[in-house]
Amino acid sequence: MPELPEVETSRRGIRPHILNKQVSSVEVRVSKLRWPVPDSLEYQLMGRELLAVNRRAKYLLLEFEHGTLMIHLGMSGSVRVLKEWAEPGKHDHVDISFKDKAGQVCVLRYNDPRKFGAVLWLEDVESSEQIKHLGPEPLSADFTGYYLHQQAKTRSVAIKQLIMDNKVVVGVGNIYANEALFTAGIRPTLPANKIGYARYQRLVSSIKQVLSQAIAQGGTTLKDFVGGDGKPGYFQQELQVYGRAGLACYVCGTQLEDIRMQGRSTVYCSKCQKGR
Image 1 (cartoon, helix red, strand yellow):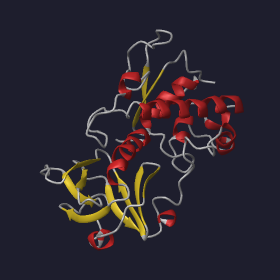
Image 2 (image 1 turned 60 degrees about the horizontal axis):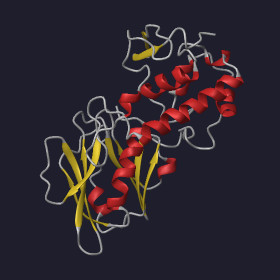
Image 3 (image 1 turned 180 degrees about the vertical axis):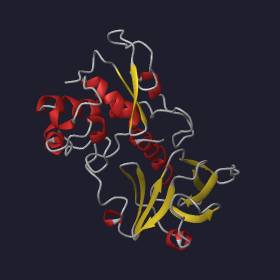
């Protein structure tokens, strides 16, 4: 599943090619995604200039004067910018064409093999059900050790579960939760309210470090993900624990353990990551 670094990589990849250009056509081949593509999409977009390409959590936000086009990549989705003559493939569900002032056209193409993503039109994105309950961005100044410690004080859930809660902080998916907890030396199963302030400072620093490194590497490609240029991400080569269950810890040599938490693979080092 594309997580925050993959969505940010996509945003940076498509932005230079479509920003400040005018929508010249909209083609919806498959409308039955996680949420149906609205019938009014062509009406809302045709002739409109794209003013900004932003991201909130795992959502791409294409900002127009009168509203926002929200794209969610779901489990296996991607967006790419292609030449206008590029033939669509089997899972290419939505095309939005953009024209510059010289008349040159490019196509923003949404591909989603599993159809778990979404392409939605929102007149007020901040009050939408997808956005209004979200916590702070993990790379923002609002996400601090103090903030996370305060959030955890009354919660006995496992720390991994806490940092994957989008109401607490957005965009820390399974891959990066595993990696950040390893870097911070915290066992994923430790109750959130049993962790002290200093360790939360370290954990927040680790989350920011891991996500920043992943973005710099173009995200993590384990199966389907490609960036806006069609290229895979390379952060999988930097993974310390995720996907390495049963192998030796790079730091101490201990065999990495794998447990299931909320149905997700959770890999950790019993020596490097303290259980108390």
